[in-house]
Length: 138
Image (spheres, rainbow, N blue to C red):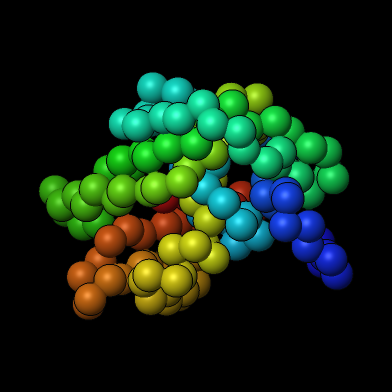
């Protein structure tokens, strides 16, 4: 989907397809924000006013708050890295947890090789993604 005009009062996302679960994360290149559907994953959550999320079907989904989520990612054999996502929108009615590739790309380097996506910060791997069914999962 291509948007010519971006409304600064909306957050955008392209995943409203029903994939994912309350604990899985999809890495999404069209999202302008991180989205979490599971309140239990938040380490901090503020119920401050947030803009609605506009999905790829152009529906506006209300966000119930914004906060911090810690995501533990497997980065190798018996190795994990805890990724701290800030300003994550809590949207319990959304289809999946989303990590905005655009936001992560501002602080990390991205490489894609076939069906594998690797993000590095300062040379260290911070997470790996794997493409399945046309979506990239953490």
